[in-house]
Image 1 (cartoon, one colour):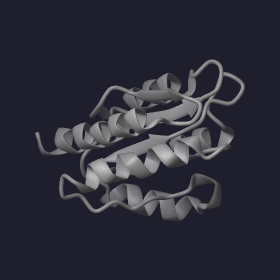
Image 2: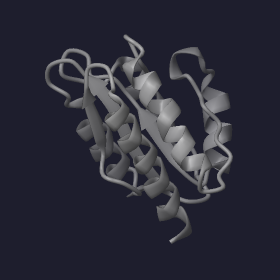
Image 3: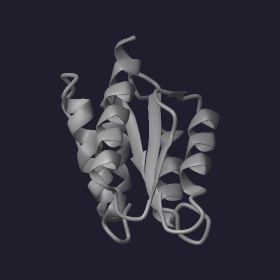
Length: 139
């Protein structure tokens, strides 16, 4: 979820990294998603990446709703990671990681947070994050 487009820009670079490792990526915008569609796709997922902005020191409600559905699905590989942007505090990624660990997902890469609009260097870090998360599935 991206309120200013920064997390969305990160997601595009993360996607490039994942695809460079031979994975097919399905991007789902949580604010436009039916619960059943998310559950169905989770069942097929080898890797789950959650992108979130931090708003008022937390992940937005749509992220928490989506994560509540994770316990209703059994992904093929329980590997996940979180990334996102923030303006002031940046807690959302750590909170999402804790929830993923509570759902017994293995974190495929350390959470990646960026402040404000990503630079070219930041986008390179996003691609590397995607590569690392994808490699955790095949390890």
